Structures are given as C-alpha cells and as structure tokens.
Amino acid sequence: MNKQWVLPAPAYMHYVCYPEFIGHYSDFPQHAERRSEGLLNSYNLHLVFAGEGYVFQEGERIPMGRGRGFLFPKGAYQQYGADPNHPWEVRWIHFGTSIPLPLLEEVDQSRGYFFTFDPDAGLIPVFEEMYRLSESFETSCEPRFSALLYEILITLLQNSEPLHGSVPLEIRHSIRRTADMIRRECERPWTLETMAKLAGYSSYHFLRLFRSIMGKTPNRYLTECRLARAKLLLASTSLSISHVALESGFRQSSYFIKVFKQVEGIPPNQYRRAFSS
Image 1 (tube, rainbow, N blue to C red):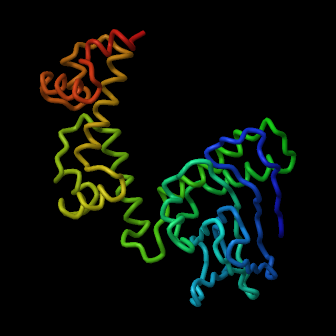
Image 2: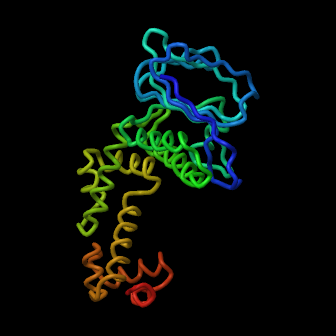
Image 3: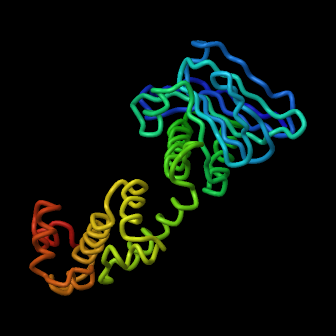
C-alpha cells in the first residue's frame, strides 16, 4: 500500500504547526529515499508500526522496526528506506512550524533525532483522521489538521525516548500511572516514601525519575493536584473552607489558605466569590 497526500498551504499563516505532505506505506519494498543537504525545507517525521527498515546517519546503518521512529530537521541530509524482504509499515509527515516546540528544540540542534515510541499510545486514530480529512480536503479543516499534528507531537513527547536514552518507556509508563493514582487520590496523606512504594522504587530513585519524566518533584505535583481539587470544590460546592481543605488533602485549613494564596494570588474565599455559580 502506498498512500500519500500533499496539502495546500494554509490560508491562515500562523498555525503552531501544519502538515505539508503526509502518507502511509505498507508492503512497499521499493520505498527508499536519499535527499541531499538543504533539499527539504520542512521537518520529516516517520513512525514505524510494523516490519523493518533502516536509516543511514553519518555512515551508520540504524535498524528501524516496530516502535522506532526518526525526525529530521529542516535541510538535513536524509537516507532511509524499507527492508525489501520485510518492508515496514510507516506513517509519515512533512511539516512546518511557526513557533519553537519542545520536541523540536533538540532536533534543530542535530542532524536527526532517532527514538523509540509506544505504538499503542493512541497515535494511529489521529493519523487515520488526518488521512480521512486529506481525502476530501476543505479549507475549513485547516485548524483540525494543525491540532492533529500538534497532538501527534505532544503524544510523542510524552511517549518516546531517544534510542540510547536512559529511561525506558516501561519506566515512563510506570511513573505516569503512579502520577495518575496520586491525582485521583490526592486527599490521601501521601509522603515521598509512600509514593515511591506505590511505584516500586526507592525514594531517591523515584524522586529522580519523577522529576525527569513529569518535569516537577512529586511533592509539587501533589500540591498542584490538591489545589486543582480545592478550586473545583470552591467553585461547585458550599463546603466550608476547612472541609474543602480536608477533602483536598490539606490537614490544616490555615496551611491550605497560605498555600492557596501563594499559588493563586488570592485567598480561597475570594476565589469562591469570583468563580462559584
């Protein structure tokens, strides 16, 4: 199968990101590309969902199988292709951006970014919607194209790791599952030790992993979750401030009021007056 679509340049020129050329190849053993430096003035993302292929980078042949991908910056030399005997199923996008994006900052400083990703992270339905929109393109779909591409990039940011990265995807999933549990049950008397035990790591190792993967310490994350619950309760219930504090995991209402004001800039009762219905 060899499907590809070229999209017209968008009428609105300030999308955060926008696809230019998209495709889906499988059972296509002839797929091979070699582009000289400076030829392609857009980012080039390929994700492998089955089969085998390769990328050449600085004389090294890097194998590409299920759960591997590559992203070339603008103007980079590119050489890659399917394994003729076991051709890959690959979904790909050439795209541009109007502002710097987190995933692309490292790419822009390199000749190519090679990574592993989670093929079951929900990317396929996003690609499929993009293909359906491409079949009967209308200018009214431009915002959706931009949103779908942004979703793909952010999903990869959260569910990928450099090929020689120090944090395997399984550990990333473990930390994120723990974070979800903490958020759902933020009223519990969590400590660093109990959070680490839930994840199955020592406190030191858990702190380092959590900060690396979530971008903040476990205690900061817990406080943010508790404040989010408190704001919902303030806006949607008539519970007293002390009860809101307890329901949100703060054992002392005075400490809750202090933290709330530090973060939100106003005390809880003023927040309630501004946002309650």
